Length: 210
Image 1: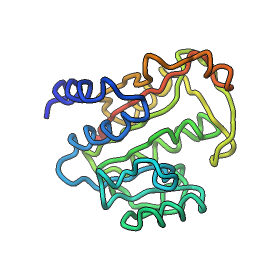
Image 2: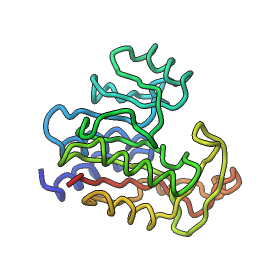
Image 3: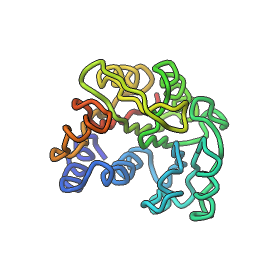
């Protein structure tokens, strides 16, 4: 499938969805760039542990990496057919080239520093086979503003500069796509009151490992 066909079909299928609802269709479309039945690695187990739509609907044999053991245990109980590994995206416990598809559904924006983000992106590339695809979805800003909150990765919720994320993806992958997927009706004043920047957007980057 050509990139233009992939992008146009995804846009048509997800036009009426919220940003979070677009994650799985984006993952399905990214997988179509990998060939049939890709070996998929997802960088968290939050949805699987908390009753949201799991990745197993797309990839029944997917592997998940989750830093929080309690979350990993809940995911194993709810989705016993998945492989859920307790570990850290900054030091993935997998061999080089072990996967065809790397899926990050808002994990990078929970890392405590830019340096840690770069470590994770480098690990994503390492565990992908040549020609494998990385889909990275993250909160980002159109400014240099960043803010800390609370999460399992060092207690941080970050809003990374969009151009910086794009550049770092492009440094490691053939960048196929970079788009904003935040719904246009998002109330940014509420986001700002909740502690995040009013310029925040959810961005999706798709890249291929050379």
